[in-house]
Length: 338
Image (cartoon, rainbow, N blue to C red; front, side, top):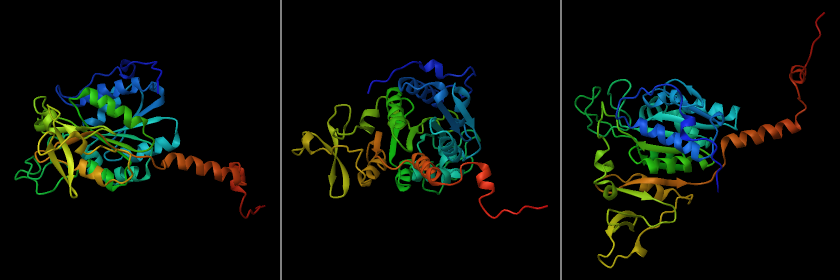
């Protein structure tokens, strides 16, 4: 579908100076979101950007759109209200692994379960950056931080697994360094009808530098990540000779050309199947045992909450005797006091 582009990415930039640390992955995400909006043919006044609290949540100040920098963990709830109050707005929610998955966890999962038409971008740097380096719900087991000086004894959330558990219909993953992939994924998320969740593996240069470096550096990225594309075989590696097959119910890495393995043996990615079994397996792959999945993992159609609310209101209004506030005020028993 051809999109008429009236604005450039510069039109989505505010006049404020960007105050993130030099080298922070947030800069790349901001630029690719702005580029995505322009390429989608959006107009700045059609967009609302809602954020919670955290380094990522300063995003709203740097966007020349409507915006609301809310309170810790409440971005999903407020974004839901914005979308229902004005369904014509394109609502983008900016959040972090702490903001969305700790204090905001309840709002996050229910926005996904309801399938509110929100574009939810989750910056995952596996640390609390704004409050100076405490471990977060996605920090690795054993991670040493200011709040876990002997190593955290907790197991981390996987944002994609949580999305699937909340009956989510869209999940994608990208990397802050991969600008082309970010733009592609953000556009696909925005075009999806319903709640879309994009996890961005993002770097915090101050408190958790190089946390994703094992899979994101240019030298190893092709061998340690797999870009999933709907309808395409799950092949990866610098030489494009590695692939995924099923061994019983377990994913297995194979080499094309060895042990009579051909390209036809490799699993083909189906992002649009309602059955989330394979999507969950792909989301849960972790290095070094497996390549980390990037791209759109799941994209399934479903009932959209805000659209269903609109339909319900229209139906009730068409059959109700109450057409005004006066009708409501006098619909029950009325007494005249003299």
